[in-house]
Length: 186
Image (tube, rainbow, N blue to C red; front, side, top):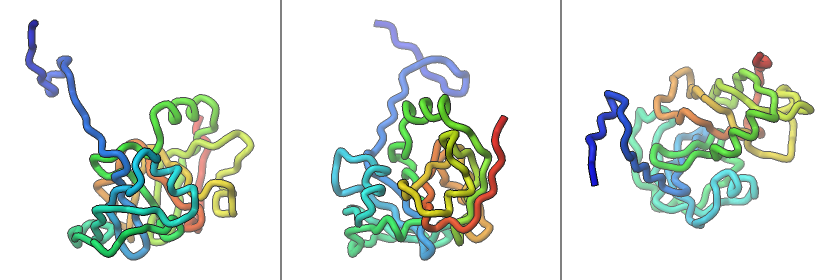
C-alpha cells in the first residue's frame, strides 16, 4: 500500500476527515448568544425549531453576540424557546442547517434573491431561495415556516460583522424580521 503526503497548500489529493458534531449550534438572541447541543439525538436543528416548542439542550454556554464577552458555562440553560432566537447557525464543528442535497434541489427549482434582512439588532445579508409563487417582502408576515435559510450569509450585530458566521447558511426567525430588502438574481 502506497501512502502519499497530503499537502492542502499545494492542492494535492488526500483523505480529509471532518467530524461534525450533530446538533451543535449557536443561537443569537437580542440579549446574547447561546452555544449548545440539542439534547435529543437524531433530529435536525431546523426540524426541532419548526416544532415551535422549547427544545432541550445540553452543554450550554452564554456570551455576547459579537464575542466581545467570552462564552461561559450556563448549566441552568436546559431549554431554548425558538421564539426567543433571532438567528441560529451551526457551531464551528456543527452540522450545516441545510443539507447539501436540499440546497442543491432548492437552487434548481427556486428563485434566488440577494437580500438584506433586518431582525433587530441584527442585519443579515446573503442569498434567499424562494418558490416562484413566494414574494420576499411577505417574509415579515406570518407564514408556515418560522425560520428561513439565508445562504452565503454575512451577519452584523449592532453594526459589527460577526466573524464566526458559517459560509453555507444561517436560519433567520421570521417573527423577528422588521425589514426586507431584496433583488432577484439574474
